[in-house]
Length: 114
Image (cartoon, rainbow, N blue to C red; front, side):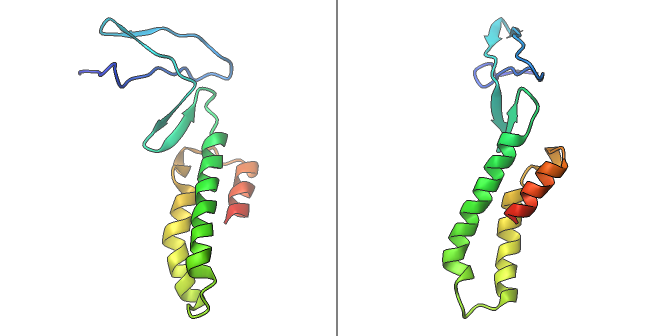
């Protein structure tokens, strides 16, 4: 397997900072505290709080945009508005949720955002 050290970074998952030197093909990989993979933010602490905050913020931005163009339109029925809301807002809010540890705190934050 060929690893591109130019595109690679190392991250140690631990609650406290741990220095780690990783060498691939004679080159050292930089150690990072967080990185994005497939649009999901991972942190070295293994917590998803920052990612959940990002998703809630993205969903709020979508809702603001939809509010101006959909929600206030009196000519659209409630059913029509929901048929626009469901496939846009909900996936934006829940993107990457399979990785979240669903605590009561996180569940309530998601419910408030909905």
